[in-house]
Structure formats: structure tokens, C-alpha cells
Image 1 (cartoon, rainbow, N blue to C red):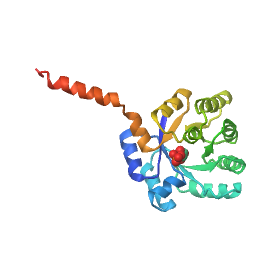
Image 2 (image 1 turned 135 degrees about the vertical axis):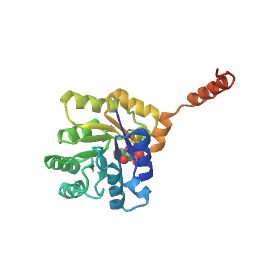
Image 3 (image 1 turned 90 degrees about the vertical axis):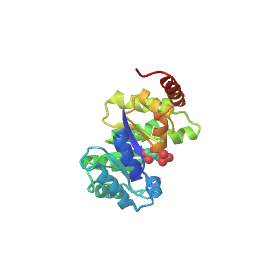
Image 4 (image 1 turned 180 degrees about the vertical axis):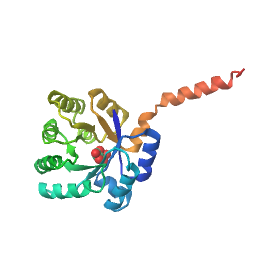
Length: 220
Ligand code: E4P
């Protein structure tokens, strides 16, 4: 399973690449705003970090666009800037059509803000390279997520779509595990979520105990 870092902070991205060998990055307008840098500057800095690799970087089109032709035009402009860029488009009729046109131009897209399996299905039909079911937001809204991820992966597998499933907005180790068990290809999460998922309080407790035994035992 692949891990993408959901961030536009270049220090976080560099750390996650060096220490965790992350497989890609997803950005969104919130992450770019948090970076404190202009959109173009930050996406090009991320592109530089991944230059020479085949790791994808999702960059989102202007979220105010509601015309598929404008989405395609912006997608083509962004895709020309880096071979790593994947064009992030909102689920919806215009976004789906834009995916179709970008796929025809050999440009990869990632359908974002996906909250139903039917939306994921249409993204796959239209040629999306990636589809991002947002599980964290859904669960915060009181909706179940395990069946949701299962449905999306089952649909993809039933029909042999090439689309990779990015389980997005994962908030904890349990959700990362749910995504992996369901057979999703990728999970994207923020740095604190991954960091927490690599730890367990009992690991620390156990290490402390082993250190005591070690200290009480002669080495030779
Ligand atoms: C995924 O591609 C999105 O960028 C992300 O998961 C959105 O959720 P968040 O910013 O609330 O984590």
C-alpha cells in the first residue's frame, strides 16, 4: 500500500520522503494557504523535491471554476509545469467531464471531494487516474466509512478500472488500517496522523522495561 503525505509544507514533505519513503503528495487549497506561500511558488517547490522521480503530486485547480473547459485549460497549464503533477478536480458533472478530456490528452487527474461510491464510479468511468473518497470528513459527519471504502474498491475491482483509490483525510491509525484491509491502493494523511500511527504507547512501555532488564544484566 502506498502512503501519500497530505501537505504543502516543504519541510514536512522532505522529512516524510527521507524518513518514510512516501510515495507521493496530495495538496489542496487549505494546505497551500497554511504553507504561507503563493500557490505557484509552493507547487513548484514541491515539484523540485520530487524531480527525477515518478511520484505523483496532486495539485488542485481553482475551486471557483465550474466550467469543464476552464478546468481542462487550467489542468493542462498545471500539467505542463511538472511531469509529477496530477490534476485534482472536484467531483461533479463538470469535474468528471474535465477528467475525461484530460485523460484524452494523457493528463492524470485525481477526483477529490468524493463522498459516495456512485461519484467514485463515475470518476473511474471517465478515466480518472486517482479517486479520493474523503473518509475523515464523512466519519466526522456521523457516517460510516468501512462499507464506503469497501464499495469503492469492489466497484473498481469488479470492472477492472485502472483508477487508483486514495483513501483521503484519514485521521488515525484505525482508518489507515481500514483502508489497507479494504484493498485501497493509497492512503493520504497529514504528518501527525502518520507519526502517531507509527507509535504505540505499549511500545514505549515495553522499551522502558527492556531497558531496565538490560541495565540489570552484565553484558559479558
Ligand atoms: C486529500 O487529497 C485532501 O487533500 C485531504 O485529505 C483533505 O482533507 P483535510 O485537509 O481535511 O485533511
